[in-house]
Amino acid sequence: MNGRLFKIAGCSGAGKDTLIAKFLEKNPGVERSISVTTRQPRRGEKDGADYFFTSKDEFKKSADSGEFLEWAEFCGNFYGTKKSIVQKALEKGRDLILKIEVQGAKQIKEKMPEAKSIFIMPPSLKVLEERLRNRHTDSEEDVLKRLKAAEAEIEAGRKFDYTIINDTIENALEKLQNIFDKK
Ligand code: 5GP
Image 1 (cartoon, rainbow, N blue to C red):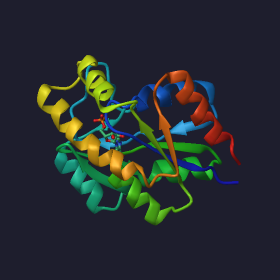
Image 2 (cartoon, rainbow, N blue to C red; image 1 turned 45 degrees about the vertical axis):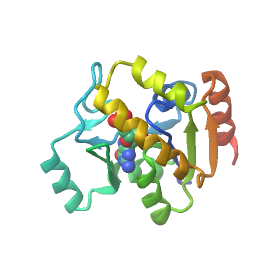
Image 3 (cartoon, rainbow, N blue to C red; image 1 turned 90 degrees about the vertical axis):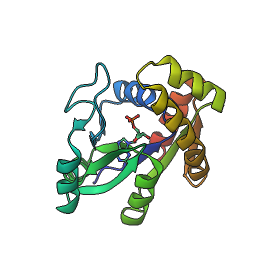
C-alpha cells in the first residue's frame, strides 16, 4: 500500500521544526521531505539534512525542468519540494511529511487532493514575535517580513483539514499523533 502524504504549514516561528523533529523521533516509520531552498543556511543547518541549499539560477533550472512537485517564493527566497523524494517515499509505503508554506500547500491540493493538511498556530501573534526574536537566527528585517507574512498565512490556514495550537510541545505532539493514527 502506498504511504500517505501530510502537509504541515504554519507561520515562521510557530514551532513546526521542533514539533516535526520530536514527532519523527517517536515515529521512525514516518519520513520528512528535505526541500530545496535559495535561502542562506542558518547557523547549525546542514546541506542535505535541513535543506538542499542552492542558488536562484540552479533553482530556476530545476523548476523549469519539472523537478518540483510544488515551489513558492517566501520572504524573498524560493522553496520547493522534489517530486522524486515524494514518489520514492510513497511507493515504499512510507508516510511522508512536507514542511511547507501555504502557497505550496495549495498547489499540492490541486495535484494530490488526498494529502492531509495540518496548520500549526502560535498561541498568539505576540508569542510568535517573541519566538522569532528569541531564536536569533534571522535579521531584524527578516523578522519583520516573517511577521507580516504570518497574518496572511494564518488566514490561509483556515482552509486546512486540521489546526493545532502549539501552546505546549506536549499538547501539540499529542494532537499531531492523533491525526496520524486516524486510518
Ligand atoms: P524557513 O526559511 O523558516 O526555513 O522556511 C520558510 C517557510 O518556507 C516555512 O513556512 C517553511 O515551511 C516553508 N517551506 C520549507 N520548505 C518548503 C517547500 O519545499 N515548499 C514550500 N512551498 N515551502 C517550504
